[in-house]
Length: 234
Image (tube, rainbow, N blue to C red):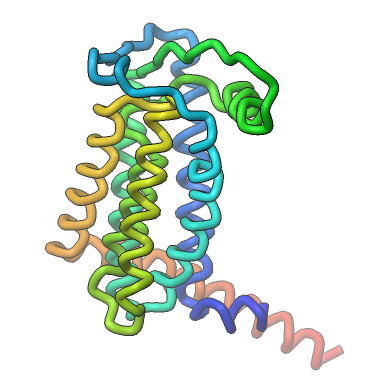
């Protein structure tokens, strides 16, 4: 735990873990609920003209490391701004849930040919990730949060902010060139990130989220103190 606290302030640990768990619950839960429902395909001519580029799977997979690093950086910022960010993150996934359940989407993936390492990686991706829950794209949503979550931070160098912007764009492009998402999914993810981030920074909704986590922290602290007292009495 001491190692974790060196990386993150204690108040950021539980909210970040909870945000990850909530994301998984929304994605996999809605997928299970809608498995047998009619799914809509929003493929447009623009999407058909985008080439399939298996090599871009590198950016798609590196997105997970990128998210971890930037969410930790966001967690190391000011407490109020962090809770506003977490509020936006949770709010965005809640909106995603309603889209996933009431407007489930799918697409038609290309046939894969060849046996290169890139094709094998795409084959694995297609096996483990069904073509569902496409709109809005969570890959694009989270990547854009990684950009706007640090853009006003004075303690983060401009070169890294620029890198985050470029890398987020590469991730978004990879969702298109891997045929994981279509352009409407990409736009939807970015727009949703911007809207929920704006809402979280222009209202006091974050106070309720912060209160919930601080109550949990207080109870955990009391439990820890009680256990320590019991050990001392023994």
